[in-house]
Amino acid sequence: MNGAQSLVKTLLASGVDTCFANPGTSEMHFVAALDENPAMRCILCLFEGGTSGAADGYFRMSGRVAATMLHLAPGFGNAYSNLHNARKAGSGMVNIMGDHATYHLAFESPLKGDTEGISRTISHWTRSSLSASDVARDGAEAVRVARSANGRIATLVLPADTAWGDGSEPVQALEPPALFRPSAAELDAAAEALKADGAALLLGGQATHGPLLRLGAQIAQAADCRLMVPLHSPRLERGAGTPPVEQLLYPVDANAELLKGVRSLVVCGTHAPVNFFAYPGKPSVPTRPDIHVQDLADETMDLAFVLNGLADRLGAHSETVAPVELALPERPEGALTATSAGALIARAMPENAIVVNEAVTSGAPITTATRTGPHHDWLITMGGAIGQCLPCATGAAVACPDRKVLALTGDGSAMYTLQSLWTMARERLDVTVIVFANRGYQILHGELANLGVTQVGRNARAMFDVEDPTLDWVALAEGHGVPGTRATTIDEMEAALDEALAAPGPRLIEVVL
Image 1: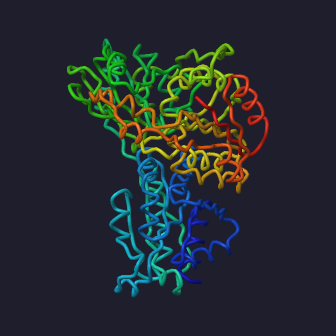
Image 2: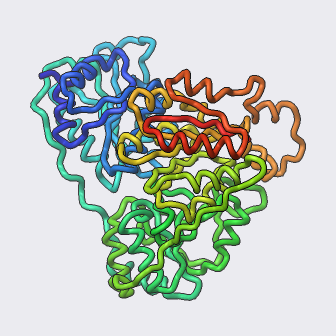
Image 3: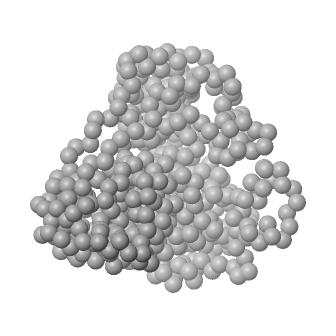
């Protein structure tokens, strides 16, 4: 078999059976090898940022590594923004980046670029296969790396001649290395710190959903301390039946107020709080200057071992934590606003939904309204680079075909990766996209004021709005094969939600604010 065939069989032998792809000429032998192996699900994304964002959402909801196919350095550059988001989320993936044949790199062809260089700025591991016989071994190592440390980005550069040359037999990836664990002394110190006055346990990473979230709540109750999660978590389990948690906030002053009583903070699965941006005259961190912070474990470590160790020390395993009770908002009246839209979503969303939130300006009231809604998973843009919502929702829907996905996005954010609508239609994915059309990058108006700029003229306004012409999201959706509806009133949005959530397959609702 050739190198490309050995790579595809290696991926399948190693349990990687999904590839989000945007191929080019240098990947044609890889495409042919994928075509010979129907066990590999190949999903075409019309922009490379869709492939990386989809692989991120797929990992967050399945815990499984997917492959991406990217076309040389420019294609990898197109994927970069959502690779950044994926890295911040701790999502594992294997990028297969095609390259020119090794002998062709001696010439300055138009698509020649620094494939290894661009990969190393964002990938945890990069390797170029030197010969066709190396490809299977290199592919297996890429899978092993992608599964290590709870999720890593591994990139294999595949020169065209190593894809078409004579390859080796497939290789099954080895198990990833054991996760790092803190010492017994560090666990002892953390358990004592949680019992102090003004203590809080901050959970992140894989500890914000499933059994680890519940164990964290038992620990907080046994220690009589506060239980907190970051503003951004890769996958936060919320709604009825989940443990109550305090979520950090975006506004600097409000976040500082939330944290002002915390004197001792134990951090597990994330990092100590930091403000999203710097602002003149304000500190970079929201915590008080005299706080004691113990970075017990970051997201790459053995969080199950850590939390069980704390629970053992605090006698927390027998604790019974009262869960969040279902409390739906009243049906709103009046104008359609972000607040009333949030209430409608909370009332309509089905049990066990997956909500991907990049509503930005409109997001805060939706977060509040759904906190006591039906049980759901909440996925957010971890790296702050917008354009992640639609691809992430695509990957989440591929990972969980039996669950309804709600993709909440601002109109400005959605324009970055609107090609994902076509992939949703092609794959018949059960995603309801809700576009909050406030006709601009409205959050930037507030950020301008936060930075002390009070005079706003024509140039600034022109860079913040997406009017003249106005985006027609119903037409954009239907042009990508997704049925669309526009809602300008509460009655219209309620009817559109009922219709979209009752039907399988993708739908889009443009909510005009």
